Amino acid sequence: MKLPRNVSGAWLIKALNRLGYGVTRQTGSHVRLECQLPKPHHLTVPIHDPLCAGTLASILNEIARHHSLSKEEVILRLFGND
Image (cartoon, rainbow, N blue to C red; front, top):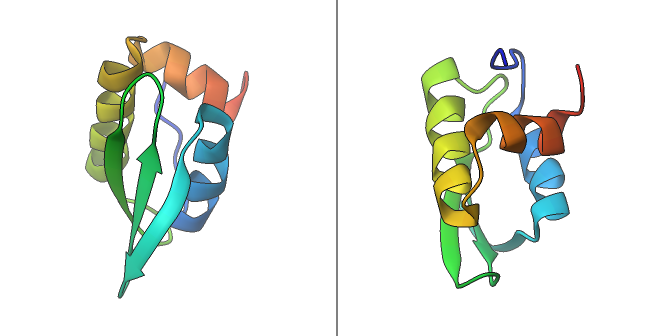
C-alpha cells in the first residue's frame, strides 16, 4: 500500500488514538505519545504540516514493530482504504 501524502502531525496524533496512544507531553513542536498495550511504548511526533515522507514512514514502521503488525495493516487502521 502506498504511503499517504499531506498528513499533518496533528492529524496523525488524533489517528493514533485508535491504536491506544495518548499525549503525555509536548515540547515545542514535538508531541510525546504513549501506548500501554501490549507493553509501554513511547513515540514522538512532530507537529509539522505536512510530515516528511521519511518521517511518516519511520513512525509507521515503529508502530508496526511495537504492535506486531505489518506497515500496510497500520496504514489501513489509521487511514482507512484510501
